[in-house]
Length: 477
Image (cartoon, rainbow, N blue to C red; front, side):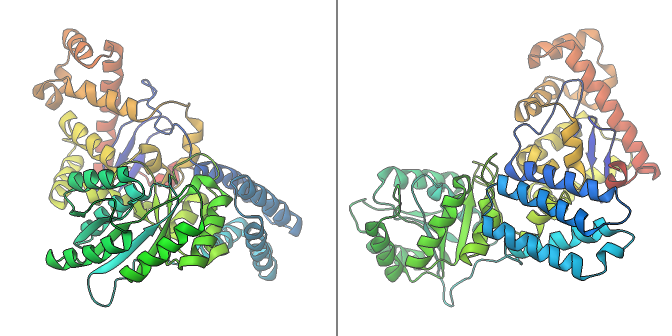
């Protein structure tokens, strides 16, 4: 895989299966926009280690000051106080107990220890779904109203289908008839079967009927959307117990809004005590405040986070990897997730063809448009860029701006060109520029800036082919 970047504010080129994207500084296509709590946390923690890296040797005082700043950053992100204290204490003990302070690269060793302890705090290894001994496996979703439970049920079903399973969605939230309609619509959109009945039928009875339906259609997973409440109460817990008895689920997963901060931890503790949770799904993890609950919830409850929701789209659900989130928080990127996202939207044959074009410098605006559309399918661009090691610091040097709208603007410009113009942009003269600008709702200057940027991309393609391109990390120093 090759990863190349020009100077800050210019284009990013991803090849080897990672879609290519050119970002034009002239059009101010800043893709980062609103920052998530983890981007903000990564900035603060990154500054701490940048200061440590400037020191040849570290003293105990240096370590204590760095950990104090890390502790403050975590507390501002709404991480549980006890969890933060335990985490920093473990780091301090390991740093001072070893030969870290005498090392020639102490900051790197401290970072390694912080990463390992952060992974431990987040839950250690990734925890997969547990299937039943005999199909169908039964997954019961619980949670409060407004947590995104119904949408998450559809997202989970889509995840299962993409994993080669045959899910059946079950609408058992009879307290809110709109939830039944919502799940039915989502199932139709995703082409996933939904078992729904009259809202007057008891949820436990619905689950029993759904099991029979699953066997009839050979579904091997049931994803059950249960009732919610505005707050935890005795009636809700009794109903959850009835559904659990009828369903005998192999997974009971709590859907909780990460933006609730430490209240999310309290809710998880209460549900776990009453119904026994096997996993957690944290929604709205792309939010810009109080998302630090994700760093606390496993350590406090003992229940693993299995999935995180990172947007409103039906495919905006990811398995939770503690090591990958720890790497992103510490500015180390998350290339594995980025590659997985790219592979999910590009087939292998098309990827090989694109690589051939890149290597032969025959990349044209038709290919550019295709890559742009694939990048948009991968998710919000700010999240993608955050996964590339070292690029968070570049993001901070760029001006604030909008993201998806600017992507659409570039797409509109290219779509307003004829096929001949996309294949041979050198024929675009003044009159063609004016026509393209009218068709895309932009200005001739915008067209000029995009074409100039594309020429820079082509130059970089030639560098890649001649072996002159350098790895991303070396360009970020």
